[in-house]
Image 1 (cartoon, rainbow, N blue to C red):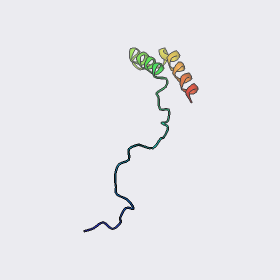
Image 2 (cartoon, one colour):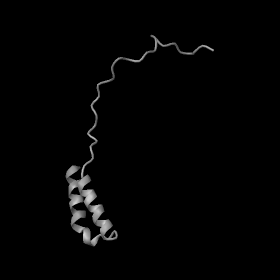
Image 3 (cartoon, rainbow, N blue to C red):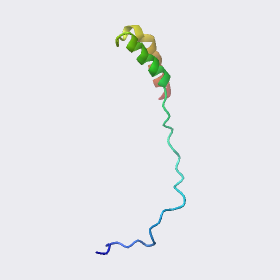
Image 4 (spheres, rainbow, N blue to C red):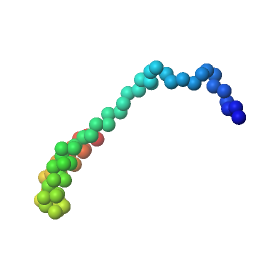
Length: 65
């Protein structure tokens, strides 16, 4: 059965792609997050001994936003 729509020209892949800018999706605050999680692991996931690490992570997040 023939197709219902006929393309105006033959279907073929182009030699180039659209020139779009990539969004800056680089991860931020990874170091601070790793330090915070390591502190949590050492202290059985208790927030009290890791208050400084948590504050540093939140400061980094607010700076990044």
